[in-house]
Image (cartoon, rainbow, N blue to C red; front, top):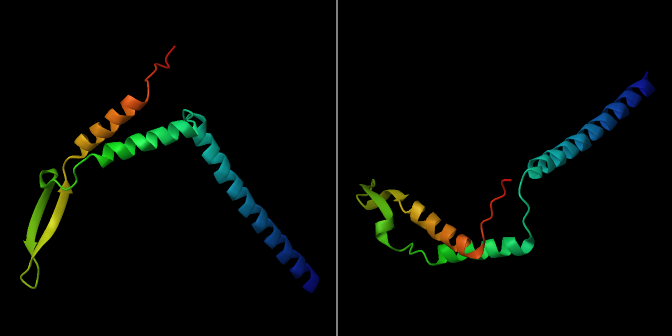
Length: 112
């Protein structure tokens, strides 16, 4: 009886290890499936795109207070605090980034 219990425990442990490996394989295949329909990008393209994004962000004036809506409040000690801060120039920032990307790449129509 003791041998059959040990055999069952070993079988369960082996199956758990196999199940764990199958889950890892499943996640890998799911990632591969997600990537199937993605357009391909070379490392040079990625580097160029990264540089364009960095330049688009780099020339944006984050210190301009007109880019933010600040809501003030008074804390328990009677000090004024910034109760809320909202960045309201996201579309301008995105436009600058996309402009840099547009200057870096030629857009081609892939429809046939």
